[in-house]
Image (cartoon, rainbow, N blue to C red; front, side, top):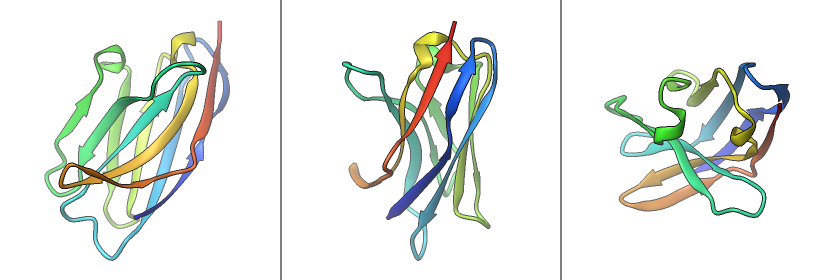
Length: 116
């Protein structure tokens, strides 16, 4: 699965930002798509994910209530709406696809920087 991210940038604490990821695949049935992030010098972590077929979502605890992941099946796009951003949200954000417990695709990443 090929993934292309858009969005990202520099914002101030409390601002909102939207990330989008378009997937190129014959079908996304059976996949979960989501976002990972990697702060400088730290490990990559899962931020949010959505099962393409069921729409079930999951979030890491630190973003619950602030971030929302959604999908547009017609456009093969997954969107991460990030509200009330905090400096600790600063990271490179990667779009990822998973199927059968394995990573099926990973985008090049987009930088999100939140200033205090």
